[in-house]
Length: 288
Image: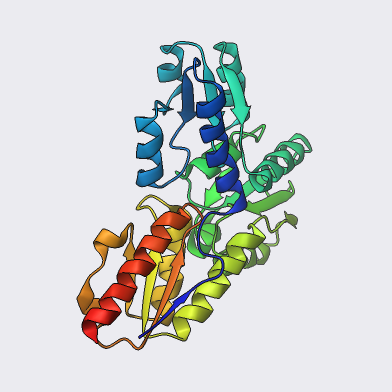
């Protein structure tokens, strides 16, 4: 059985940057309380490790207000403008680790909304990245997750429309949403804000899944980009499985597999990927 690891598997730039900053603070700010606004990463293993080292996850401004003043780290997903402002008003030292690609969307949405554009975001309306993006629009925004929702969306035909996407959104789905909005003959200004690393990861995963007879997608259960990778791989290889750690592996998945592909989401640590590879190779030996 051949085991093939996708070159793009593991931490993306933005996630690695944010996680490294938390560990740096732990090392250099030993006497200061450290908080992250939401889990710094959608991976339970990393979050639990940081918790054991003293980092506290805070989910609301109300919860943050009740805590001792310290450092609050904004994760790569980012937050809305008002949320960041209120953090500082609480007397917290804010370290903004919003991914630069997400920050670009914040600037575009703020700029276009000030110019009078209606804002449409392609993405998951409850995902923290999308919630943060909407929070930079002056007059709110419409969020659509697929072409069907775009078809039902009613906007003011007299006002221009600015369309952007969650950085981890599926590229084809984004195209379909834009196509639906164009059919309505709105005056659209569209910017493809899907991260190149995300698109490359998705394309590589699809190609790999199409060439194997068993596929593993590794990532946290709450990771949006990992869920999308799983959906993409499942279309190409029915024998695709979504796992969080090596403990989730089942020998039966590999009984008839000659080639197994492995990829991981942008929030999946390399150490977990290596553990999965190690166990898959052991299973290969057992099957032989």
